Length: 384
Image 1 (tube, rainbow, N blue to C red):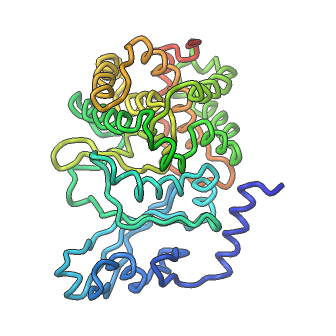
Image 2 (image 1 turned 180 degrees about the horizontal axis):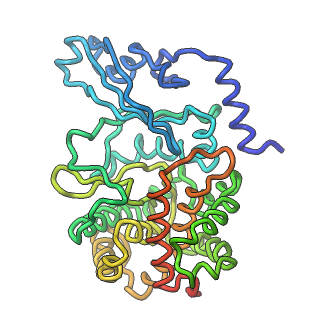
């Protein structure tokens, strides 16, 4: 039986033989160099027949799970008069490693679905799409967003100071989209285009999630509490249990990758959330644990996390979600840290064929924060 990785490799090799420029809006360019003024005109000027892109320039390459570049665009007078966007942020799965990591679990298609069908339903601080498309045969994808560089205060990193006010802004944003889709009718319609979180996670095993994350845990000894590190043999089984817990829980839209680098501080001071490629139908508790564990310093997490969980439950109910007791939420919050850690130990030791997704210092800092939270809260001791 042909594996999905083998399918992706075969499709990629076929694409390389084509080596053509995409010229129609329905086509997907095979590289950034294959993007033409004509292709951009078809995409950007489709509602303005007199407008034309007359020149564009590519920014520096920035590759991770997807390959990303900024694009500056110049229009003819009709395009200028229409106020069409001149600064774009583009992410794609052009390279083989991008197609494997984005295609195996369905991440490339998930983000396209989010921007085309889900984003218009949400009143949250998040990028707005200009164009998004995915080819299920080749696993190629491209998403064009308006570049937010000039309109935000900053894009977050592991060094960003997340104040109490900023942490509460993160909580309100997550509660808003979790509550909006909690056991909603869309779970049986448009959201079926997302897999469930357990389905998504199981697909990552095809590119070495177990092996990579286990090795990453071992290699991160310097930042993991000694008491937790000695329990290495318990980590993977407990991780699988935390993932499978979602089979028994009510579902909503789950972002899936809410680490601090995927947040930005908007011009009004509120927090915004980007990179929706890990969207699934899952339980809200994983996003909640993931955001708090990576955004806050260890000291601030210890001081604020119970208050933040209570605030989240209040805002979740206000947004249409369920009324959940703190004790119930606290058990899930502690347990869901397991697969949060896995997302970063695999980043420290990518499996063969995976791209190098994050700088080592950032990866180690997030592993440190998450693992200390797991040790503080005895995540391995959760049995409910």
